[in-house]
Length: 216
Image (tube, rainbow, N blue to C red; front, side, top):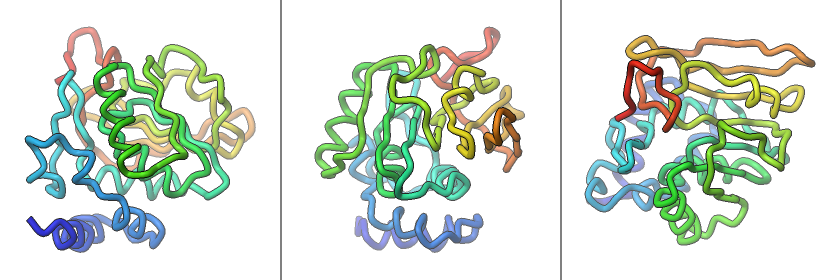
């Protein structure tokens, strides 16, 4: 597979038609080598419009969702970012291209170790990948300008919202399957403004699924 051509095709044939038009986002997607964050068994699907299994019940977001999330968050070069759900490390790598520093939490130790290795191989030095449950406790580095929730939750915990700085933005997929929405939350003073962006359907973060449902 010609990875450079496949990456170009992903951007031009999938992402631009989906409304991803921000130049900084497209440049980031062109620079970061997605195929190096995909499990070997699925390397041939690195640029396909599909969610890729990572093991341990986790999945990579499809490229369109990753790109739309990055565009909605509009990360600036002087900002700090919290990610919940490191997975393969790819979303952290994208965020790191635009932010000053990224702190990312992964509850599954094997995934956290794999993500750290992938980020190191990619030469990305402004990401701190932590093994732990990012939904359960306040990150010591809080508050953050941006929070990216890389997996579905039924609702965003108030404890996570409180880690946003005034003017900060949070992206999450919320709801119960199959009626999920990608949501952007902006903090204005002590208020939180919710904006539903589009419908989608993704796997829940570990421990975040409703009692009657299971992540897969």
